[in-house]
Image (cartoon, rainbow, N blue to C red):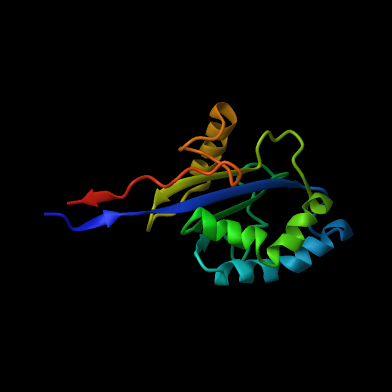
Length: 158
């Protein structure tokens, strides 16, 4: 007997190397804007989840080394993430990203992949997907907003 259909959500990892410590003046604009951007994401259509610490963001979490900041989130679709990134007030901060971050030594800084709805990605899984993107380029296992791949076909569960 079939009990349901497994659908998929989009996992997103974005990493960057801050140009200075978050306490320095060079990062003040980013730090000041972060609560607004997180609230905007939390309220965005299609937003599901984001990695955060006790402070409500992920700035203190450095799973990939002290010089790499991480943003890990889940969305219902590529379109929902794209709308947040490019069609909301987030775009203003995105345009300023090179003031605050660089990607020196990082081949890729963004990776997307599909996960079963109702599950959450781990930072280890995210790092592995980034490695797949670097090794194989965009494909169904790891891709980018510029080269997205469709979600897997829904699976029937028994």
